[in-house]
Image 1 (cartoon, rainbow, N blue to C red):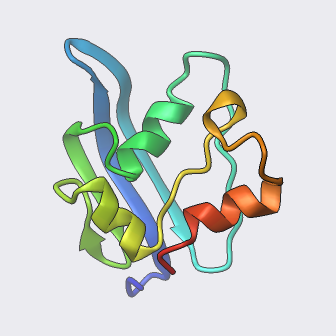
Image 2: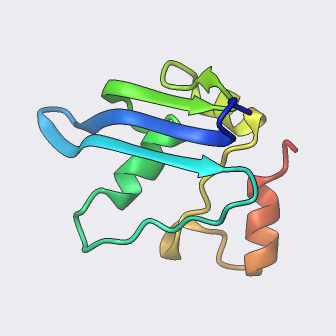
Length: 110
C-alpha cells in the first residue's frame, strides 16, 4: 500500500477505442477498506474506466497504480493474479451460476 493509504490510484487516465476518447483525465483513489461506486449516465465512461484498470482497454495517458505498482502495461491475466477482476453485468456472466458463484469465478486465482 502507498504511504498515503491508497491501494488503487488512477492519475489523469485517458483511454478510449481507436480515435474515440471515452474517458479523459480521470483521477481517483481507493483506500484499503473503502467501498467505492462509479456513477454516471450511459456513455459517461464507467465501464471504460473499469476495463482500463483491468487491462482490457489500454490507456493513452496517465497512470494506474495498484499497491504502488504500475498496471498500465500489464496483461489482463497478470492484473487478475494481482487481485483485480471485473464482474460484468447482464449477459456477460455465467447465467446458470448464482451471483456468489460468478464472483468466485472472478476470484479463482486468489
